[in-house]
Length: 242
Image (tube, rainbow, N blue to C red):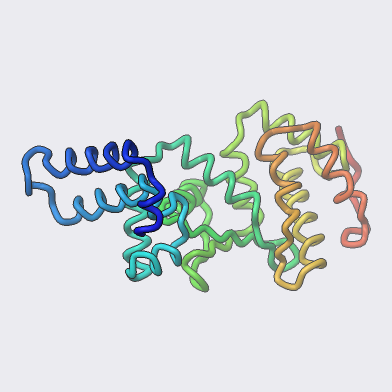
């Protein structure tokens, strides 16, 4: 902590400390509840880079010498005040591009350590009438391909969904409906990756999923053509209807 503080300019220190003391004395000195004091100090540590803004739960536990539960609650309480719906939607999109695959691509497993994004995703799934499984590890969310399809649809505008659908059909996805096209694409991708790694974790999955979540039809045709060109896992394809 001393080393990081020593690297800061006087101006940065004065600015951060002034904000903290201003909050502490509002509306009067000593009126701030203990929990609010903790959050204010945590924000002060983040603003001075003593604690990294995107520190993991483990880093918070070891740096602040607190339990995992307290670290998670700190992050949740701070970020629920900072992040609006658009920012949460963006963070969810980031999480969706780095999945693990299980059971030949039938299930996605996302690791989301951020407690607010985790809660946001669970609520999204509930509203979309899907059930997720976190029984194995509270940071891991396991969900079927249909749930992921609906999540992606919820992330995209209608015109983006149509552009993605057409691009996936053009490279070999069967069916003509949005959900059918996307479901077959995700299953194909999952099966491809589970075959390459025992735990279903393959770093380049993001290469395929980012264009879909960005609605980038040109990039989809570039990166997805190889997925549907491989017939090893699906010998019988339905006729493509454009």
